[in-house]
Image (tube, rainbow, N blue to C red; front, top):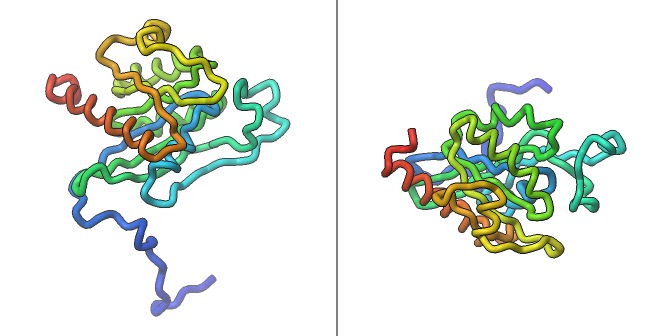
Length: 206
C-alpha cells in the first residue's frame, strides 16, 4: 500500500498512552513454568490492552512439553506477554511475561536484559520446575519474589514449608495470589517493589 504525505498514521489508543506525569519506568519479568498463570497475570493487572503471543498447542508438543496440571490448556505463549501498570503517577512498570514451555526458554535471556526484578509464579503441583526458573534469575543477578498461584486442585502449604522446599533465604518474600484478580496481582507487584526498595537501601541492588 502506498502512503501519501497527507496520510495520517494512527497513534496509540488514548487509554494506551503513557501518562504525562510518568517520570520513571521499570522493567519487570513474570516467569514460571508452563501453565502457572503468567499470561493471566499480565492480562489481569495491565492498564493497557496486553500484547500476547499465544499460539494454539498442537500434536507436535506431545512428549515434548510437560503439561501436567494444565491438560485443558489449548494455547501457549511462544515469545512473550507485555503489559503496563502505573504504580504511582510518576512510576510505571513494564511487565514482560516469559514463555513457559522449556523449548522456548532460550528466549528468556533477552527478556531478562534490563529487568530490575522478577515475579516467579509457582504451582504447588509442580514445585520442581521452579528450581530451574529461580536458578536462571540468580545467574543473571535479577532479584525476585515468589508468588504461589491458587489452583482449585493444588495442595496448599504453609510459607515456612514452601521456603524450605524451595531452599529460599528468609529475605525473599513468598506470598499467595490469585492471578485472575487484578488486586491480587497488583499486591504481588507491590511486594516486589518494596523488596527491591529494601535491597536498594541496603546497597544490594545495582
